[in-house]
Length: 63
Length: 371
Image (cartoon, rainbow over all chains, first blue to last red; front, top):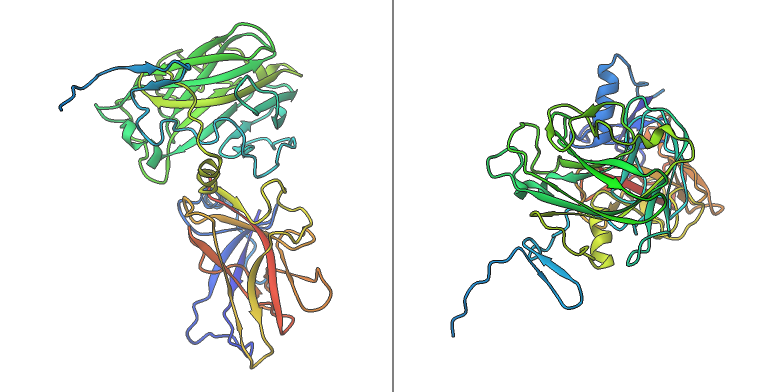
């Protein structure tokens, strides 16, 4: 089981920098809270892709 | 004065050291942590690997048992000249699926063997083994896709006795799934009872890690298997185990797994020793910064990252504002602060603490880029 984590960038006044910062998304493995990068060479990401290809859907970001 | 050239298969010194045809290489042994001395994940404590998939034990070595239940541990029982071995004990016996110990060797460390070409080289594996069940066993070499697998057989003559074994494996000239860079170049396998079996001592074109007729250790409750001193080198002669200096061996392991904790502290342990700095958050309007963590060595790929706070809570980092040990989830979508950014094979960045101004975030990590 996995969930997606949205990463927002903020300025020093804690205002979200939507205008120029590029938000990123991470995959978090729920079983151990590990953060999995979207790198095709990463073995855990390969396992995640297999899991998705099998018809599973990660919990969306923000939930 | 000119000197001639000697062409020898091996040289044996007066002290018994054997220098082989490939010994001039700085990496004679293609196996990392072949003497099982480095165990960053558990520091010698036993664990029960979950079924299915490769589960890492001592550094660079994993086990896979699809149905059998085992206890896996680095132990101090070892043959003369070694301090450690990797021990597997069968606690629930079944034979369905896979049952083996293996090391995935990175393509960069195997490319010169030239598998998949007419120039593929012969290699020789040597190791010490000890099993509670004598008989014929399998040492296998397999490609990344399970389409080429050599099942070399060897015999353990006496139960519960250390025995030195060598097997020579001819180069495989065919196959298209050999990888030569950061992927898995080849996998070295100690079969412990995989269900599927292939023809002994030949390159099979199927995912058959066990030679037909070989012992299936995983069928017997209480059975044990130990291995250490594993070496794979070019040529058809086994030479003396290549003892690399500890710091070099440790760095080679860190290319695939590293941590912030001290060497003998298991990840997730409640401790502040070794914590690294994440971001710093000033008061609103004052400023703040993300923190950068650099891995000890360049890793094979962008790693999977796990973090802990000082109390050992996974997915949390500590921040120095109020009471010691105050922590915050790194995946707090409610506030929008979360995760790690700019991950790479060299490092990662961690955000400031969002909930408390004028505070510094601290955390422990493991970074995993195994094959």
